[in-house]
Amino acid sequence: MILTDQQILAEIEKGTIVIEPYDRSCLGTNSYDVHLGQYLSTYRDEVLDARKHNEIDTFEIPETEGFVLQPGKLYLGVTQEYTETHATVPFLEGKSSVGRLGIDIHATAGKGDVGFCNHWTLEISVSMPVRVYRHMPIGQLIYFMVQGNVNTFYNRKLNAKYNDRTDRPVESMMWKNNW
Image (cartoon, rainbow, N blue to C red; front, side, top):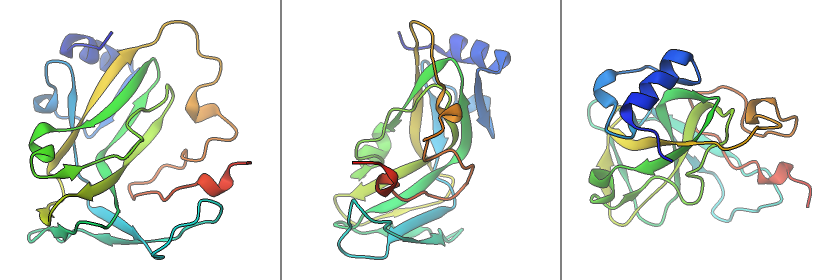
């Protein structure tokens, strides 16, 4: 089941959903709108290697003129909002208005875990050049009920790779996996 606006508000009041900054006008019928943070990152290397640490360069989106994203390039962005989810499963989806500009905000990582506590890193790609701005609406969080007990919340997993709180995009940590 997807939480409605009333259920999201109830979870916020209980502290099982945390959104900072929170703006009541961003609460939709069954989702919460999130915004593009001030940072974007790009990988340094043209060829990425899943077995090594691929380093990124991070830069600020200019305040007034924004930044033009180019096709064929992967950008890592970040949500302005820091979120915590302690009793539901959060899903991040792009807003339809963003999709209609040819912007995809995630390649595969739209689902969060119970216990995820951080800003969301976005895997941004575009189908044509498009100018984006910090603080523009970029996506929406949808919350699903969990059935059953959780053994290990994400923020308590010893091998969780994305627990360090940051308002900057985080590169792939695939290289930390044992395979």
